[in-house]
Image 1 (tube, one colour):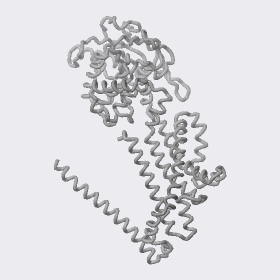
Image 2 (cartoon, rainbow over the protein chains, first blue to last red):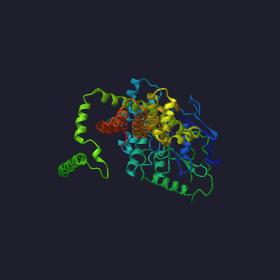
Image 3 (cartoon, rainbow over the protein chains, first blue to last red):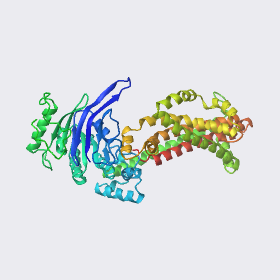
Image 4 (cartoon, each protein chain N blue to C red):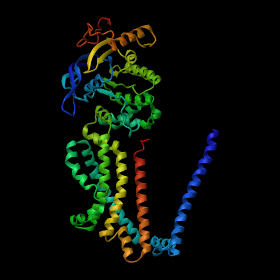
Length: 275
Length: 265
């Protein structure tokens, strides 16, 4: 699924009536089956951006559209799945019932529901955990349930809000690998929010760097390292140190990159960045 | 492995001792009661006026073969059950509404806060005036007892339902009305149970009060009536019966809670 965002601005109303700008004039377009990471420090509005795309919140100004989708833009699209920071599994439902929830909401015939649930339990190695409650699951398993719950509805866009935030370092690496595998298999658009440079480089086709106060896009960096990516290879470490420099500000120095991806389709990679 | 083998007898030993202490303490209580009555203690308390445990027990066993005793229990239990049922179906939706909407909070909560601290017994005159039957007024009292604890718990719980769960449900296609059933209600279930267990206790207090003051039936009525008829054994049996009923109903609530909130660690 393609996503076109133009002039997106979001203000939050405070109790005293003044408006706090969270996102300011965000424009970008995301291509079919692209893996995009939104990278930035906390408070840069990257999670808010994701929620706006999901239709969980409404923009103050600007538009989000999904070219080529019959459902049109805005609103809660049936075609988009969301993975929350702490997975937001329903604690009172078993793994099986969690996965089934969305199918019930969509009024899929009962028999078909159970078939689909079985299929996803098997595909995500959760067969043995089917009757467990979320409180009995490890972090990795919770993530798999969350992904299965979202993907069994066959979304065309998967939005992930810092999905590895709460995990230990070793598990993180494993699950990042898993997410790439899932993305390659499903061939749908992924958007993932993170504040971890390495994670972004490992996962993304394109990294959109955001700055806070209010949230803006400062850079858009294409990652052209072939997959599977190896974190210790020179192309990886090189890009990482460049990105690091970019993030701590030493190399940006207010000079905008000669690159505005606003309405450039994904299939036309711009010239390699000279950051 | 060895550790486990050793651990079991130690635990069992502690458990056995714990049970032994409980039984001995019960025996000591009954014995002291018996002695205090038998030797006609009049100071500082007039134990001499009370019937002894043996007499009470003998009388109680007699009751167990009579329908009247069980009818009393049945009548009171029905009143409590009716009050709790009414309390649940009113306090849960209202608590949810108050918890979620500022308007509802402003509109309802001040009024409710005025009524909440009033002891159940103080509702009785108004209850008698409002209802045509004594039955109605007693059930009203048990309802009030159940209503407020459930309301307060639900109101707080409604505000604590994690936003992420609601958003997740919304992403999965669950609209706001369905989320009341599918998200709010199950998420608030532990708090509803907490309110329920407090409410059940208050409800029992209410039914006994109501029956003693105005009733013509029920275990509370019989307990008070027996005092007037100088049948003190029956009063004491009534007391213990009320205690047992209260204990049984809170055990029942705990059982229901454990069944329904299995997902909680």
